[in-house]
Length: 248
Image (cartoon, rainbow, N blue to C red):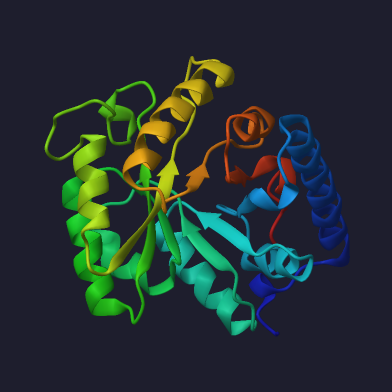
């Protein structure tokens, strides 16, 4: 590759390898403590603000899943990574505007942040027109019930933002595949409290959709607690990639 953004310095590769080893050890220890098999948990490397070269290097180190939260950055980065001959599984994890759906469905393998019936409809239409296979979707849950923070609200009758209506809309969409749930621990909540509440919601949800078993929860600072409460995917940025390197 001649494009500097898709290459990585040897010292940066060593930094990434060391960060990855530490995170993998944390996940393995958390699974052991929870009595779970290590293979039940997938690490998603959250590479927002980091260059395409980091994604290529991580893929070379065995990372299979990558997360981004802004379409403008993610679309360009995915193209650079593809040009380098690397094909990770791309997760869109940020707040998604309906007018960005047509772009996101071109590169994302999973969208983790669907939190309204209207967004599900827009994403379904975009996926039907822009993909040759279903798009995997996780419904984002509002743990604290505040829709202003993002997330569908459990135990709500709101026809657009209630968790039940959103899940039903995704499950009934022809171009989407309901994979499970995603959540972020709310600001001001202890992770233990947040993920215990999420586990309650997950139990209810899986009673309705037993095949939708994915649970994306936990980040660099609280992944152990999330794994203890059943997370199948953890989203790791700073613990893996450290401070953003100076681009040259």
